[in-house]
Length: 217
Image (cartoon, rainbow, N blue to C red; front, side, top):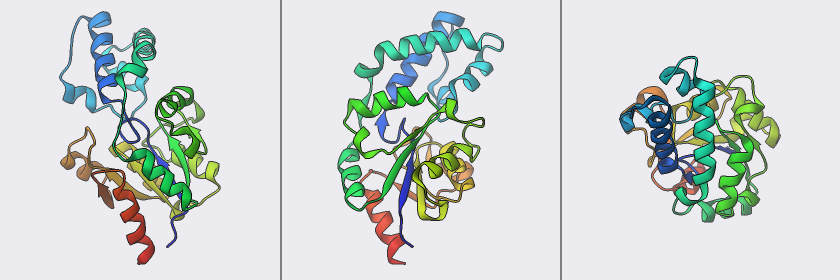
Protein backbone atom coordinates (compact mmCIF):
# COMPACT_ATOMS: atom_id res chain seq x y z
CA UNK A 1 0.00 0.00 0.00
CA UNK A 2 1.29 3.42 -0.95
CA UNK A 3 1.06 6.11 1.73
CA UNK A 4 -0.05 9.32 0.06
CA UNK A 5 -0.94 11.53 3.00
CA UNK A 6 -0.54 12.14 6.73
CA UNK A 7 -2.79 13.91 9.20
CA UNK A 8 -0.76 15.28 12.12
CA UNK A 9 -1.93 16.52 15.46
CA UNK A 10 0.02 19.63 16.48
CA UNK A 11 0.43 19.97 20.26
CA UNK A 12 2.66 17.27 21.68
CA UNK A 13 3.20 15.78 18.22
CA UNK A 14 4.84 18.31 15.89
CA UNK A 15 5.49 21.03 18.48
CA UNK A 16 6.32 20.64 22.17
CA UNK A 17 3.63 22.79 23.79
CA UNK A 18 3.26 20.68 26.93
CA UNK A 19 4.93 23.21 29.23
CA UNK A 20 2.90 26.04 27.70
CA UNK A 21 -0.39 24.19 28.17
CA UNK A 22 0.32 23.06 31.73
CA UNK A 23 1.61 26.48 32.78
CA UNK A 24 -1.44 28.17 31.25
CA UNK A 25 -3.84 25.79 32.98
CA UNK A 26 -2.08 26.42 36.31
CA UNK A 27 -2.33 30.18 35.85
CA UNK A 28 -5.99 30.09 34.79
CA UNK A 29 -7.21 27.79 37.56
CA UNK A 30 -5.30 29.69 40.23
CA UNK A 31 -6.48 33.09 38.99
CA UNK A 32 -10.13 32.16 38.46
CA UNK A 33 -10.74 29.39 40.99
CA UNK A 34 -7.94 29.76 43.50
CA UNK A 35 -6.79 26.18 43.08
CA UNK A 36 -4.32 23.99 41.27
CA UNK A 37 -4.73 20.48 39.93
CA UNK A 38 -2.31 17.56 39.55
CA UNK A 39 -0.64 17.39 36.15
CA UNK A 40 -2.21 13.99 35.47
CA UNK A 41 -5.67 15.52 35.83
CA UNK A 42 -4.92 18.25 33.28
CA UNK A 43 -3.27 15.85 30.85
CA UNK A 44 -6.50 13.86 30.61
CA UNK A 45 -7.91 16.70 28.51
CA UNK A 46 -4.95 17.06 26.15
CA UNK A 47 -6.27 16.74 22.61
CA UNK A 48 -9.78 17.88 23.55
CA UNK A 49 -11.23 21.36 22.99
CA UNK A 50 -10.38 23.82 25.75
CA UNK A 51 -14.02 24.56 26.46
CA UNK A 52 -14.71 20.89 27.28
CA UNK A 53 -12.10 20.96 30.05
CA UNK A 54 -13.25 24.28 31.48
CA UNK A 55 -16.84 23.03 31.65
CA UNK A 56 -15.64 20.27 33.97
CA UNK A 57 -13.61 22.57 36.21
CA UNK A 58 -16.09 25.47 36.38
CA UNK A 59 -19.54 24.75 34.94
CA UNK A 60 -21.19 27.98 33.83
CA UNK A 61 -17.91 29.91 33.93
CA UNK A 62 -16.20 28.23 30.97
CA UNK A 63 -16.27 31.40 28.83
CA UNK A 64 -14.47 33.35 31.55
CA UNK A 65 -11.84 30.65 32.04
CA UNK A 66 -11.28 30.23 28.31
CA UNK A 67 -10.73 33.96 27.93
CA UNK A 68 -8.17 34.07 30.73
CA UNK A 69 -6.49 30.94 29.37
CA UNK A 70 -6.18 32.29 25.84
CA UNK A 71 -4.90 35.69 26.94
CA UNK A 72 -2.08 34.13 28.98
CA UNK A 73 -1.39 31.46 26.36
CA UNK A 74 -1.00 33.95 23.53
CA UNK A 75 1.21 36.26 25.62
CA UNK A 76 3.57 33.41 26.56
CA UNK A 77 3.26 31.19 23.47
CA UNK A 78 6.54 31.81 21.69
CA UNK A 79 8.78 31.68 24.75
CA UNK A 80 7.31 28.50 26.25
CA UNK A 81 7.04 26.21 23.22
CA UNK A 82 9.93 24.11 21.98
CA UNK A 83 10.70 22.04 18.88
CA UNK A 84 10.76 18.26 19.02
CA UNK A 85 13.89 16.57 17.63
CA UNK A 86 13.83 15.42 13.99
CA UNK A 87 10.42 16.90 13.16
CA UNK A 88 11.50 19.43 10.52
CA UNK A 89 13.90 16.98 8.89
CA UNK A 90 11.20 14.32 8.73
CA UNK A 91 8.66 16.69 7.18
CA UNK A 92 11.27 17.68 4.61
CA UNK A 93 11.78 14.04 3.64
CA UNK A 94 8.04 13.39 3.50
CA UNK A 95 7.62 16.33 1.16
CA UNK A 96 10.40 14.94 -1.05
CA UNK A 97 8.38 11.72 -1.25
CA UNK A 98 5.35 13.77 -2.38
CA UNK A 99 3.38 12.80 0.71
CA UNK A 100 0.71 15.40 1.45
CA UNK A 101 0.40 16.65 5.02
CA UNK A 102 -2.29 18.46 7.02
CA UNK A 103 -2.70 19.38 10.68
CA UNK A 104 -5.86 18.38 12.55
CA UNK A 105 -6.01 20.13 15.90
CA UNK A 106 -8.39 20.94 18.74
CA UNK A 107 -7.11 24.51 18.92
CA UNK A 108 -7.91 27.45 16.64
CA UNK A 109 -6.36 27.18 13.18
CA UNK A 110 -4.64 30.57 13.43
CA UNK A 111 -3.00 29.61 16.74
CA UNK A 112 -1.85 26.34 15.22
CA UNK A 113 -0.29 28.23 12.31
CA UNK A 114 1.57 30.42 14.76
CA UNK A 115 3.09 27.31 16.35
CA UNK A 116 4.13 25.93 12.97
CA UNK A 117 5.73 29.22 11.95
CA UNK A 118 7.81 29.37 15.13
CA UNK A 119 9.88 26.46 13.82
CA UNK A 120 9.52 26.86 10.05
CA UNK A 121 7.12 23.94 9.63
CA UNK A 122 4.30 25.76 7.84
CA UNK A 123 5.78 25.26 4.36
CA UNK A 124 5.27 21.49 4.62
CA UNK A 125 1.62 21.64 5.70
CA UNK A 126 -1.10 21.97 3.06
CA UNK A 127 -3.91 22.88 5.43
CA UNK A 128 -5.12 23.08 9.02
CA UNK A 129 -8.41 21.84 10.45
CA UNK A 130 -9.07 23.70 13.70
CA UNK A 131 -11.74 23.44 16.37
CA UNK A 132 -13.92 26.10 14.75
CA UNK A 133 -13.81 24.38 11.36
CA UNK A 134 -15.99 21.46 12.44
CA UNK A 135 -19.21 20.81 14.30
CA UNK A 136 -17.83 17.72 16.07
CA UNK A 137 -14.33 17.81 17.53
CA UNK A 138 -11.99 14.89 18.27
CA UNK A 139 -12.47 12.01 19.00
CA UNK A 140 -15.27 12.29 16.43
CA UNK A 141 -14.11 11.36 12.89
CA UNK A 142 -15.26 14.69 11.41
CA UNK A 143 -11.98 16.63 11.89
CA UNK A 144 -9.99 13.82 10.26
CA UNK A 145 -12.53 13.44 7.46
CA UNK A 146 -12.21 17.15 6.77
CA UNK A 147 -8.42 16.85 6.78
CA UNK A 148 -8.62 14.05 4.21
CA UNK A 149 -10.92 16.14 2.06
CA UNK A 150 -8.42 18.98 2.28
CA UNK A 151 -5.72 16.64 0.92
CA UNK A 152 -8.04 15.05 -1.63
CA UNK A 153 -7.24 11.59 -0.30
CA UNK A 154 -9.00 8.54 1.15
CA UNK A 155 -8.31 7.36 4.69
CA UNK A 156 -6.95 4.05 3.43
CA UNK A 157 -4.08 5.99 1.81
CA UNK A 158 -3.20 7.98 4.92
CA UNK A 159 -1.76 7.89 8.41
CA UNK A 160 -3.00 9.74 11.48
CA UNK A 161 -0.14 10.69 13.84
CA UNK A 162 -0.89 11.99 17.32
CA UNK A 163 0.02 12.03 20.99
CA UNK A 164 -3.53 11.69 22.33
CA UNK A 165 -5.98 8.78 22.18
CA UNK A 166 -8.53 11.27 20.83
CA UNK A 167 -6.32 11.98 17.80
CA UNK A 168 -6.10 8.32 16.90
CA UNK A 169 -9.77 7.60 17.57
CA UNK A 170 -10.70 10.40 15.18
CA UNK A 171 -8.30 9.19 12.50
CA UNK A 172 -9.34 5.57 12.81
CA UNK A 173 -12.96 6.61 12.39
CA UNK A 174 -11.96 8.25 9.13
CA UNK A 175 -10.21 5.09 7.92
CA UNK A 176 -6.59 6.08 8.58
CA UNK A 177 -3.77 3.87 9.86
CA UNK A 178 -2.96 5.00 13.40
CA UNK A 179 0.48 6.03 14.67
CA UNK A 180 1.03 7.10 18.29
CA UNK A 181 4.05 9.13 19.35
CA UNK A 182 5.82 7.53 22.29
CA UNK A 183 6.87 10.90 23.71
CA UNK A 184 3.20 11.60 24.50
CA UNK A 185 2.08 13.04 27.82
CA UNK A 186 -0.32 10.09 27.95
CA UNK A 187 1.24 6.97 29.40
CA UNK A 188 1.60 3.93 27.17
CA UNK A 189 -1.07 1.93 29.02
CA UNK A 190 -3.67 4.67 28.51
CA UNK A 191 -2.82 4.98 24.83
CA UNK A 192 -3.09 1.22 24.36
CA UNK A 193 -6.36 0.98 26.26
CA UNK A 194 -8.13 3.91 24.59
CA UNK A 195 -6.56 4.05 21.14
CA UNK A 196 -4.87 0.70 20.34
CA UNK A 197 -2.42 2.28 17.89
CA UNK A 198 -1.23 0.17 15.00
CA UNK A 199 2.24 1.70 15.29
CA UNK A 200 4.14 3.65 17.94
CA UNK A 201 7.16 5.85 17.27
CA UNK A 202 9.56 7.28 19.86
CA UNK A 203 11.02 9.91 17.56
CA UNK A 204 9.47 11.57 14.51
CA UNK A 205 12.10 10.20 12.12
CA UNK A 206 10.87 6.68 12.95
CA UNK A 207 7.77 7.57 10.96
CA UNK A 208 9.80 7.05 7.79
CA UNK A 209 10.53 3.45 8.86
CA UNK A 210 6.82 2.88 9.54
CA UNK A 211 5.96 4.12 6.06
CA UNK A 212 8.66 1.94 4.48
CA UNK A 213 7.36 -1.12 6.32
CA UNK A 214 3.77 -0.47 5.27
CA UNK A 215 4.73 0.05 1.65
CA UNK A 216 6.94 -3.06 1.59
CA UNK A 217 4.08 -5.36 2.65
